Image 1 (spheres, rainbow, N blue to C red):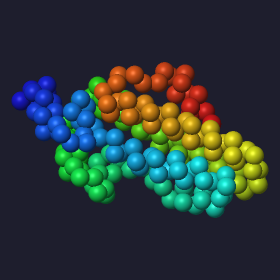
Image 2: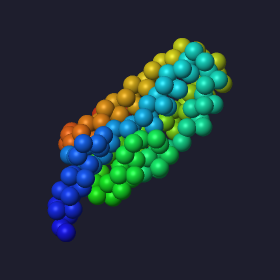
Image 3: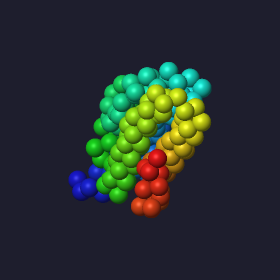
Length: 161
């Protein structure tokens, strides 16, 4: 099979599931990031939540589905190897940015908590969660077949927390 024929065959396999037949990706993966966003949002009111935030770890797309109760998890795992690079490359780059932001945020918020600056803690947590949401929106768009990503200036601004 050619790559296009392989992709077309996989598109048919995922029809009628919660996996996009346009890209072979599933939005369920973004739940991994929704979890850390919710935790980070709680930190200003409950600073001890930073410990839960620091326990959060990046998880690959396929590992997320291996550990999930997603009804089509086996199909999602297998389909990922057939996602065309025009979707997979920007998707993985976006996920790398998300993981970088979380790691940096945990370190930064932990230091702000140690300083006891409640106002800065609230401002920083808010900026971090907004930045994460922007990248999650981009990832969701890619999952649904959008070629729109962020410009390098937008990426730099979002990463410069």
